Amino acid sequence: MNRRELLQRTSLLIGGSLLGADSLLAKNIDWDALDDLPEDYKKIGLFSKKQIKMMNEVADTIIPTTDTPGAKAAKVGQFMAVMVSDCYEPDEQKRFLDGLATLDAECNKRYGKKSFVKLSPAQRTEFLTAIDKERKEFQKDKKKREAPNHYFQTLKDLVLWGYFTSEIGATQALRFVEYPGKYTTIDYKKGDRAWGGY
Image (cartoon, rainbow, N blue to C red):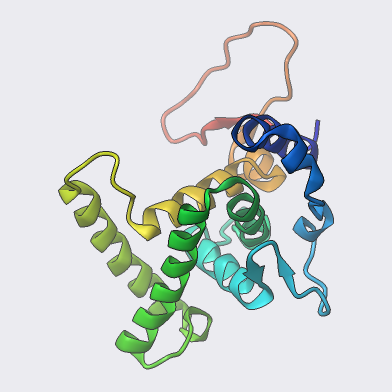
């Protein structure tokens, strides 16, 4: 089973139980949009091409290319666009979109740049580190556990989910053994990469 099939089945399972299978099947999800963003492709779900580009840049700042490809190579921005558009409730979608607008507004306030994508790599890292510190304080001081998370918490969770369930994340960033067929013990030494499955 590849990632596309897994996402389709997961969406049907989760979305079908929340919205009713008929309403989810009625949506025509463009799964090919996860593969690339051609010049004439305007949007995925609720997200414009500009927003998807921004999400890819944020994701790539969180998980940059090192000896393995980063989040942008895994098309995490497209993954987030599909998940938020098709699986989130309207109030959660609004909170996520407002969070993206807040990121850009903060970039403008702190650096005089109108968008996160206009920042230099050093500024991006510095900026997201400051936002992450703000997120930790917010989450720690949150009065009710049911209260919504900080917008950056949701974005960061989606980046990690999208990356580590992608083929790149599961097979290159993590160590990978494809269904060995029997129970086996595989040694783990301190400092080794974690195990992943695809």
